[in-house]
Image 1 (cartoon, rainbow, N blue to C red):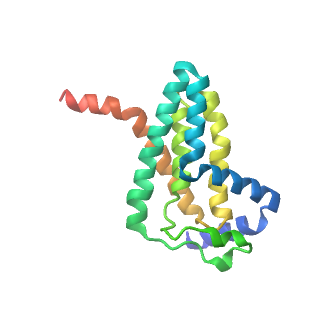
Image 2: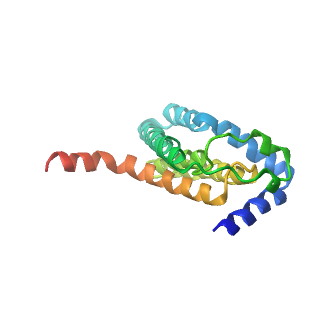
Amino acid sequence: MREADRLLTQQAAAEIPPPVAKALSAVEEAAEGAKLWCGTAALMLALGGTRGRVAAASGLSAVVVAQLASNGVCKQLARRPRPPSEWIPHDEVADRPDSSSFPSGHTAAAVAFTAAVAPSWPAAGTLCAIPATMVAIERVQSGAHYPSDVVVGAVIGLAGAWLTRHAPRLLLHLRWR
């Protein structure tokens, strides 16, 4: 796993063309602090009627769950260092956070929002998948994360979306036992 992480990180950092890397960085910056997902939810609220309200609420709820799990729990327990800077042949490596590399909280939030929106508004979920994928790729390309950090972040995001969708039913089921 370590060798695959190294090879994929070095490959992404070296082989993604600079104009593509700039676009990835711009999307990642928009996603920083969940700004992109909050803005998207606001558009859904304004333009989507009932479907938009449900999708926005589901998406933002899933982001909260995913962020709590990834940044509030997993990063505190894992304490994995970021990929070595010598693997990254460009200056984006200087902008990395100091927190644990594992898992990718950006990816967890992006996937959580996208996966939670999709059941209520499939077209919006499909559109959200584009920046979510860009965020995941950028986290490796910039040297902020190993590919395995991104994969686990995506799994946490999917779990957050699933939990957000099913928690009300599960809680009701438990209440009546």
